[in-house]
Length: 142
Image (cartoon, rainbow, N blue to C red; front, side, top):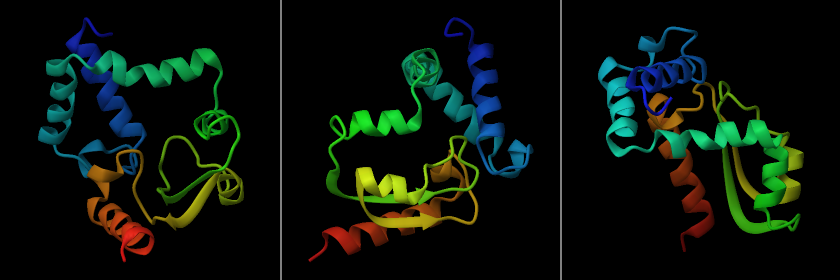
């Protein structure tokens, strides 16, 4: 797909449509300028292939999110660093139950959002930044 700007654009538009909280109407959440800017960042920087590898790699290696968590947590050892989770309802990969996540990570903040999906920073920027601020204030301020 990397050799086709139209292919890259189609893939990105499809992901924005299906991985966001837009009920199939992409322009209800994103402007054409936002979508085109996102597409152009990948095309101009030549980073589409590396950015999309994780989705292909997980599929061919059979790795699940849970397996990735265990690998990332240093061979099954619990991550002790405070961890915040902002759970958006239309994320394309469902989160593991909180009880499972807490066995791997030191979850000090778990926020279940009312709306938003995979592109939360673009879809619900105010909710996301407020959650990040609350997490930082509760875990790292003196």
